[in-house]
Every structure is written in structure tokens, then in C-alpha cells.
Image 1 (cartoon, one colour):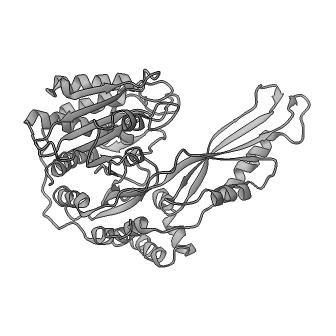
Image 2 (cartoon, rainbow, N blue to C red):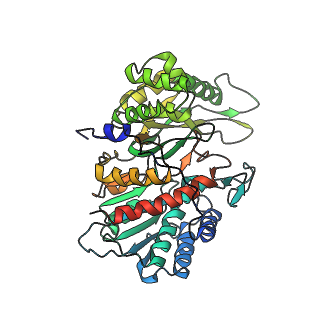
Image 3 (cartoon, rainbow, N blue to C red):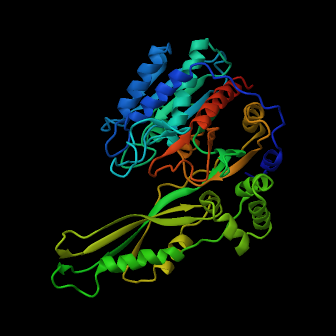
Length: 469
């Protein structure tokens, strides 16, 4: 992005408007049932089935009046549980580029014995929805499908075609990536002038106050290093002094001192500039200080209290998996630990690996290079044509809340579509707190209000794009 016209967009607060109580949107009960079915259908790589869910969703859309001939289910060869669904609502202008709603329906594995609640039961409690995938990203998937149902029921015929792609495999686990599969095998069917997927949305403070509507302008790249140590093993009754599980434990403990420096770019600068006047005085002062002196230790210490802000400012690496040993009565012969890293856009990998080696500080522990797939293509610029509809809808749905670009702390399937020439952006209109609903963790949640307000926002937003010249 050679010219950063985002600054004006980021700093321009949404036009003030008198807040008005919103009456329930049409079809909320049916939407809730759609959302419930999505959450209660296990789509994890370990125990789930994406194909089962796309069939259920297609059947529900058909029953609601969406034309069956405009629904397409694709199941990659050799992957019977990795189904994908594409829906098409034709526009009036065949020459106008379509609007595409992209969402992954697969979720990270969840074990019932770990959760307070059944992870694959849709539970509403104290103003929150609970269940695996409610925040990542089945709320948005349900909004996408609900949009298509509502538009079809209205007989809506915008100038631009509206499309939806619900895909499997974004979370990995050996499942075929549906977004990549469609980009390769059904490029024309999903072609669009603009596509929206997860990323961005909205930030809440600890009191639940809306801080900003956020639009993903860039995202981190993810990948894994592996620490490995080996030894001769032997009978557990004759312990060796060089037990490699103990050595690995020390190596992992040493990673606690691994801390990458703050790096500011156009995207996180825009975000902190927009948030500084809206957060508490201490955090606001720290944001202003970091903008002028990124390495200031006191300011960093304050901002690092937020897991989101800390991750947005730097590369991060943490241990996520450990495996070792082969029998309860044997000394281990091999121990491996996976280190998951999230690097800032454009960051080289060599310094990251060197930092891990230095932190581990044990030549007996081998560091195996990062496995992160191909480099992510640059995100498309946030043009006025892309931002203006978000700003206009935000002024009506979230009056007084500023709209700002941001750098997401994770990666999305947007890169799969950007790589084949489909401009894809991260935006959901779903507000979350600092823990982002504990995505990928225990007792994943999202507020009922966030989902219902996001539903109304995205219904209006997709229409705005579909009617845009």
C-alpha cells in the first residue's frame, strides 16, 4: 500500500447520530435456530463432519425459500467430510462484480471433559452464547446464511450478485482447505469484486463499552517451529542423569524470556491512534507514548496487560503441543515440542528462529525450521469504496463509535482468495472483549447483543456493497 490514505479514514470518527432503540429484526427466532444447528453440528477435524453441516444448512435455506438451484455443495475427492457450500443470489447487472461472503465452518477440537458445558451444545446464559465455534466463526457463518435467506424472501434484486461460500479446513488438522479448493476448482463461481470474511469487527473495554469498529487491514502469518531432543532411553528402573523430558522442560521454561520488540506499521499505528482518546487515561497515554517511542518500557508494560494489544505490536511465539516417551516404564528416547509463532506482515523468519535458539540455550535441543506454508499475499488496500459503506452503516447502528483499520493477530482464509485476484477483507461487526470470546479455548463465548447487532449491521452492509456502483 504505497499511499496510506487510511489515516484520514481511521481518524475520522463516525458522524454522531442520536441513539435509538432498535426493534428486533425480522426472523430472529429462525436465525437463532440456524445458529444453534451450526454450533451443535461438530465440525472439528478430530470428531466432526463439515459435509453434514453444509447439507443441513442447504436444506434449511431451501425450506426457507432460497432456490435450490442456486445452492452448490462441493466435496473434494478423498475428503468426504470436508464439504463446502456456495450460494448465489443473482444481481440485475451481469457485468457488475459480485459481493462474496466467505466463512469457514470448521472449528478447533474440543474435549467434553475439559469444558464446564458440552462444547457442542448451544447454550445461552447470562447474556452470552456458549459453544465451540460461537465466536470463531459460526456466528458470522449464520449471519451470512441468514442474509441470503432474508434477501431471497424479500425478492431482493440488487445490481451486483451476492454470493456466499461456507468452507471447511481453515483450522487445519489435515482437512482439505475449502477456500483454497474453491479458488482452484471453482474460481469463476466464487469470483467477486469484494469479499468479506472473519477479522476485525469491534473492540469492547472491560465494562463492555464499544471502543471502535475495526476493519482488518493486515494480518499476521502463522507457522510452527519444532524443538526436538533425543536420547538412548533405557529401563526406568535405572534412571539416567540426562533425562530428555527434563531437558525439554528446561528448554520450554527458557522460552518464557523470549520477547520480541515492538514493531509499529501503518496498520497498528492507525489502530492505536484511533483508540488512544477512547480508552482509560493510563492506557491512552501509553498508546500515545508508544506511537512516538515504540520501545518505551513503561508504556509497553501498560499495553502488554492486554493480550490483544501485546500481540498486535510484535511477533509472538509460544509452546502449544508437547509429546514424548513411549512407555510408562521406559526412559524417553524422543521429545518434541511445537512452538507456534505469529509473525508481523513482512517479517523475515531467520531472526525469529535465531531468537528461539538463543532463548532455548541448549545445543542438545534441535530447532527445526518453521512450517507455515507459502507467504501470504499483501492485503488489498482499504479504499474509500470499501470503507465508506462500513462507516455509513456504523453511523446508524453504532452511532459515535469510530471506524479504524487494524492489524489482526491471526491469519484468515482471505489469503487464499487474494492469491487468485479476489479482493478479500476481514470484517464481521461482532464486538468482543480482550479475550475475543476465548476463541480456540475452553467455554468459547460471545454476547447475545453482539451477535444480534452484528446480524443487523451485516444485513445492511452487504446490501450497501451490492448496490454500490
